[in-house]
Image (cartoon, rainbow, N blue to C red; front, top):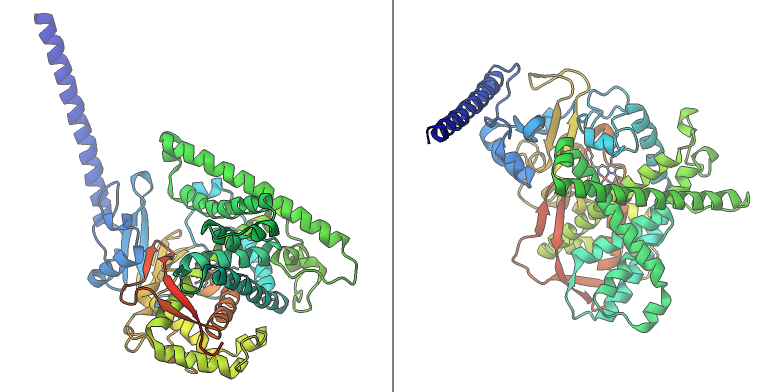
Length: 545
Ligand code: HEM
């Protein structure tokens, strides 16, 4: 009995000793955390973080929303700590265009903010920080890829192909709508996502993705003839390809945001890492197959044969001067691109071009249905450029004349930007707004806050595309950031605007669009990209057709 109680006492003592020890460790950690926090150099206003987890606001998904709330308390520049556990990161949030000059410096070579993310083990593991464009932290290879890809994306030959391709795909979509019946409701968000998937796939890889066809198929209205038209195996394979390209992006974010030890320790994370790495391996092989197939076509082409202007062909022939607009400047510029670099660029351009353009188009439609006067002016412009003939062929040159349509896209994107945060990281110590920063500091530019800032815009809450008509100079520098800005500005800007304007013409010169719910807000979910969840519409043939 005595022995028993001695053991109990011993254990109890031990437990209480252990708890006291643990408490002491935690207390020491908390005290040193707040000591370091309150005595930090170069303090910036911001909410006080918790030890280990940082600021709880940063766990909310809609970052620009909580950043806007904090801005009201702390001003146009504030700091928060995010990431949690062993990887707490300081983020400096900026909500005023006048503070973005250094961050959005357009120089490709003399730039102290060349990176988008800080060093990141997960992105290294995905092999993303040394290749491609979006997450590349190696300035030399980023610059090379950016120059080559932007030359291809901006080559008139490529842009003309994009116009033709948009017109052809729109015809295909119209056929499906006709079969469904115009009296039925359509979820435009889903249709546009499929439309842009097909469009980007064919433009980049010269391969059909059958995304529109598959969507139509899921609506269960496919008839025998349709099925005979397509080979089911090819379709299944392309559906897998499209889904895996999306998962590739999911994999990048998962590896970027999940510390290595959490990926290794938690069984669910271990499983997810394994599955995502298998997806990446499958995709790598698939895209390499496509690249080799394209190479064979190029090698077997006769000397006078005109090659397709898809991105893959353009990237594989950069040193062959295919396009007169593809002017060569330095020897480095025309270095052939390795298969692996072509592959990374292909992933990123497909990933960057689908959701962004389709979401933006949905927001344009939402605003046009709510502002009939703006729609009327747009129709006048379309008629002025293309006449009354609704089958008038669209050309790159004629689309470039649609200034009011472009003003609508700008104004919609000002009020409802598709990408709501821009990321930059300093390469060396620097200073902004009188605050000093060390190298490797993460900056976040709050796009909606800048685009609604009363010191940059008159009556910022009013929807008025005319603010962009002929008065471009009066827009404050870096106050319109829907494609980002500076050296890392969106590479697909020209292509996206061209596709959006072409779609506005193709849709509105023949149809009118009504929203099923005219009183509800736009249904969207927000992370870095504002994703349109649903836009239920009725598409009606115009009376004049
Ligand atoms: C309406 C459609 C689009 C929107 C709103 C959009 C928006 C953006 C934004 C905000 C950025 C970040 C820029 C920055 O950090 O300053 C970006 C980067 C990028 N976008 Fe887009 N984008 C669109 C379409 C496209 C398309 C069609 C492509 C390719 C075909 C594309 C390819 C890229 C690439 C490669 C980058 C990374 C550039 C770099 O880091 O150097 N985007 N885009």
